[in-house]
Length: 167
Image (cartoon, rainbow, N blue to C red; front, side):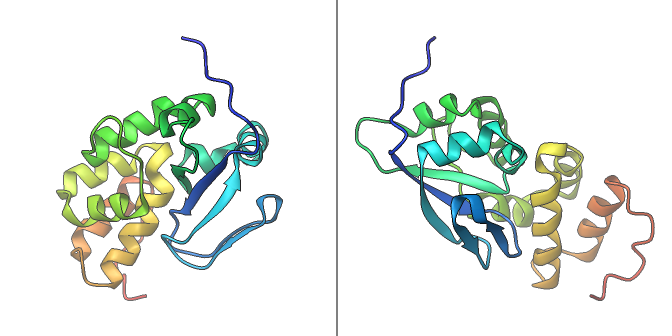
């Protein structure tokens, strides 16, 4: 199926999915916390996705959450940015419907509600490792997940000395 041609000036809402400050000067965005959002153009996102910053979109650090145009769908944008497979995989992991947009809250809910074994399996996937690990550390600090759940996730990605998680 041919990708839909999308005007580079179409506005798109992007959201910080990290639990830390996120600054990307090329897009003119600066987020101070998880869930912060801003509007960028499709052209800016396409430029980011084809350059050295494409990992930011592919590892879910920056989420596409909404398209502000009635003639272009969320799925059109995801497909055009070649993120469809990644987003479909995330929807499956997060137990979302096949056409739902991704949101930082979905990732955090997964961290809190998942079984330890599920969290460990997902954190081993390079696409999810950064956002899930960071979110799990915040969830533990906020006493929303037990220490053992965080410990097992950290061990799964190669941390060896996780004896004291007292921050």
